[in-house]
Each structure stands twice: as structure tokens, then as C-alpha cells.
Image 1: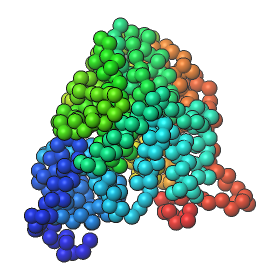
Image 2: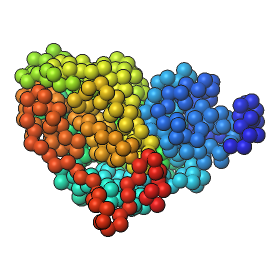
Image 3: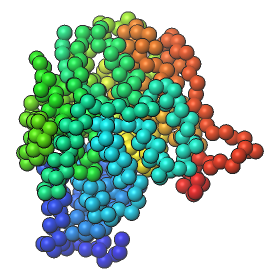
Image 4: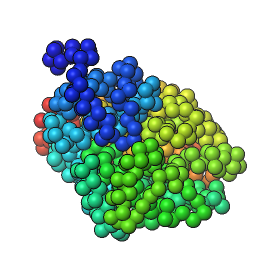
Length: 198
Length: 330
């Protein structure tokens, strides 16, 4: 990150219109996010088992949100590395719903098309496609589509495991479908419309 | 007989089949009755929430709505999978904490002639029911083959004890419910400080290097403490530590062999059930040697073998290792 913006975050020099980003993220998060209450203590980053793979710790990311650095935040890999283990959530003295804020940032990054590495967004989207088609997850379809698209060269190495999973009856060859798929589709269709107007 | 509504979750029919089998095996001795929610759908795991908020919560809430229609003398929904449990419990909680979310979700549900009033149901995990409703005394009284001498690492995972909005667990980071239950079975429960550390979740699929390190920590620590096998309460944890252990070993150049079974499989064994009826043998890292220490014989399953290693074979892409990085396969 450029040194200038770095310093601006550290000094807390955010303009008032910048705070609209913080508010936007907070409002888009399920439950009451408490994001505005962050005191920059860093307990989240210190509790994170995967912080070493993130480009910014959660604390840093929240400071950037407050500074209105929309593009930088949505380009960050932090929400995608987050494993939703909720260590930070139970330790946060301000009760910020950190894991849920990460979910919000993921969906905002997908919509803004700012996140560069497509592996994680594609995996989520493929999973969602399966659920929207069958009402249940379909591991074989998900895994084969995902690996062919993103890790084709890992496939040969995965075959023994896949073979064992199938022969042990732990991975179905065909998807299971719920009875009232039409009902689920109607619900999700209405929910999509509500998502756009919210 | 105690009755509960059951939300099995997708993995119970596939990768976590052993969990489903062993749950069915212990229901009768414990006098439990689980009624499956009719036509339940996937909870969205950790994927749907990162795409769209309202559809994600509507997907979860359809299950709650169906369950609330099926309430018949019980308002408790049991979810054996930690991710399913968290999603159902969280949806119920957030719809109360933020009523605007509840209104929108119900508007979506109405398109399918359903509705759900947040707070109607009590969402609980299977181990919560076993420890706090059935009770350790009753469990102890059903033990006919105590697991004496079996060193078990109790692995709770992350999504069960946290964020715990309903305050169900003894602790968020070092809960003792699983330890107590395994001790009631006679097992030699080891101290396992990593009990609520993450298994990597979906990172085995999207960022394997991140996941392998998390799996390595869990397996290495259990191994160092002389563990025979790990016990889990979650199909995702079981899948990652079991099915990806071989790949993790390749990645780090290690040679761990740490079987991981569902805690219900161990309960079944202690209740005198046959390994076959408990889905024992379905794990990829076999538990034969571990269970031999308590005199349980499991037919030796064939280990998954790696790709051909013959130098003169056809040129195939090599598996990448930590030192080579991704470049090795490019």
C-alpha cells in the first residue's frame, strides 16, 4: 500500500463523506454489526489463525473502511482468507460481528468486480449454483467443476482420494434433489429482488 | 422417549455418512426419537453468505419455516453438523437482533407460502442434546465396552462453540462437553489445547496452502501428545482432517497417520455396537490400529495410493510441495 494512505489511516484522518462506506458495510451486514464501535485494539488480527496469509489484518481493514478506502478494501484478500472460525468475534471487546462483516465485504467485492483472484468467488458461486438447482449441495459436481476450472493440474493427484470417497459411498455420483424445488426457486427469486432494493 | 426435529444436513448422506449411520445406531439405546424435517434444503454452508445476504438467510429460513410447521410436542431442532447448526442458530438470532432482516426474509418466504417467526424454535447441536438432555449418567449406564486405554483427542472445531449467541457452551475456546462425554465412555482423553482451532473449512478447495497449515497444526499436536485417534463433532472437520491428510503430508513432506472418527462412532463402540453398523472403515486414514488397542477388530481397508512414482512413467504433473510452491505444477 502507498505510504500516504497508510499514514492517513493511522492518523484517523477520515473525511465525513468517507464514513458513508463504514455505514454502508454496517447496514449490509446481518444482525447489528457494531462495526462503528471498533477501537482498533488489534485483538482480531492477533487471534486470527490465518492472518499470515492476509494482506491486511481485520483491524487494518476496518481502519481502511473508516478512511473510506473503498477500492483498496474490496481488493483485499482478507475476507476471502477468513475461515469463519469466530475466534476474533468472541474476543472482540466491542462485540463487532467481524466474520459477518467479512461476508458483506465478499459480496460487495464480487458486485464491484474488484477482487483479482477468482478462485474463491467462483467456488462460492459454483456451490450456490448447485444449491439453486438441486436444493442440496452436490460435492462431486462442485469439486469436479471447481478443480477443472482452477486446479486442473492438481486433478491427477486428487484421483485416488476421489476414487476412495466414491467407492466408500462418501461421494454420490448423482445429485439429490428436494421435492419442492419450485417453492425454493420462488423464495430465492423474491429474495434476489429484495436484495437489489435493500 | 424424547422427540426432536432433525436437520441432517447434506453431508450426512455423503461425505459424513458414517456420522449418520452411527447416530441411528445410538438413538435406540438412548431412547431418542429424531423426526427429520420434511423436504429440508441445504443451509448454504459458508458459501451463500458471501454472495447475497437476503437469499442466503431466506435459504436457511425455509428450513426453520418447515420445521415450525412440523412442531408436534417439540420446538427443538437438532443439527449434527456444526456449520448447519451455526447457520440455523445464527439466522434465528439475527432475525431477532435486526427485525428488518426478519421482515425481508419473511417477505421472500411468503413467495413460497411459508413464514417463520424468529424465536419460535430452539436450534441445538447433537452433542448439546446428548450432554445436557440425555445426560452423562445415562450415557455411562449404557456403556458395555468401555474405551479404556484408547487415547482420544477431543476436537470440538470452531463453529460449534463460537459465536454462541445462545450461551450454550461451558467456554468459547476450551469447552469441556466433548471431553466429559468421551470420559463417560471410558476413553483416555488427552489434553488438547487446539480443540477449538479451525480445520480450514472451505480453504482446502480455494487456498489449499492455508488449509494444509491448519490441518498440520491439529494433526501434529495430537500426534505429539500420543493420541490414538481424534474425535470430532462436525462432518467438515472430519472431511478435511481425514480426506486431506494424505495431501497435507505430501505438501509438508511429513508422514502423519492420525485417524479421526465422529464422537457418535465411539459412543456406538462403547455401547457394544459392531464397527460395521457405525460406519467405521469409511474413513480414509484407517483407524484399525487405533481401535485394535481396545480389542475392536476392523477389516483392513485399502489405503488410497498416491500417483505412480516410477521415474520412467509417462510425464505427469507432480504434486506441489511447500518448498516448490505452485510453480511445480504450472
